Amino acid sequence: MMSTAETTRDRVLDSASMVFAEKGYRDATVAEICELADANIASVNYYFRDKKSLYDKVWRHAFEQAIQAYPLDIQANADSPPEDRLRSFISAMVSRLFSEGHPGYFAKLQLREMAEPTSALEDMVREAIIPQRKILLDIVQDLLGERADMTAVNLCVLSVVSQCLFLGFSEPVRERLVKAKVYKEEQEDTVVDHIAGFSLAGIQAVRCRLEEND
View 1 (cartoon, rainbow, N blue to C red):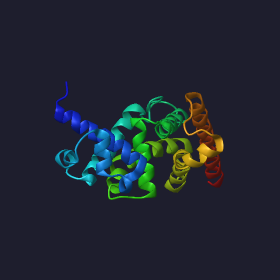
View 2 (view 1 turned 120 degrees about the vertical axis):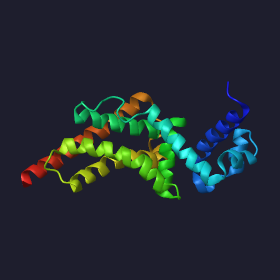
View 3 (view 1 turned 180 degrees about the vertical axis):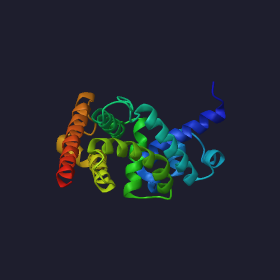
């Protein structure tokens, strides 16, 4: 059984995750977080020092929840064909973006950092984004072959990730155009299949061009 201190701290952390994800760092207030957590404002100072330190704790906590719920290699392993590994990567990204619960908070925080960077962005890029990007770089390198230089690899990685991230950025418009803020599981699979198929076709086209130019 958790102690009262642990319960209060966890409530504040969970509430802060929700508020920061929905409003961003600048618009979120400690008062709103504490009201949602049924805790007094002093508890933030006691457990987290200040709003900035709380936010730093929140995005790391959210990232851990995201990778536990939707690991990038959940449907494939290092020995799987790169096509399967690419689909697995895309599936995890899309699931995080569509998740309305705790596993989706990191994706929302990441999108907000891209639009309105805070002092946390440097750490987020170094600790969370770069390691995940390395996984995709290796997949794309395998798909393009040894002839591909890093410019080609990086551009293909950018194309894959951009398709996924656009789902997050476009949510307000998507909701009005197709009346679907949240996709059902079978619709999510359709989105994943499309992005994976589209990406594989594009990467194959790049590979063919590189081989023709040799």
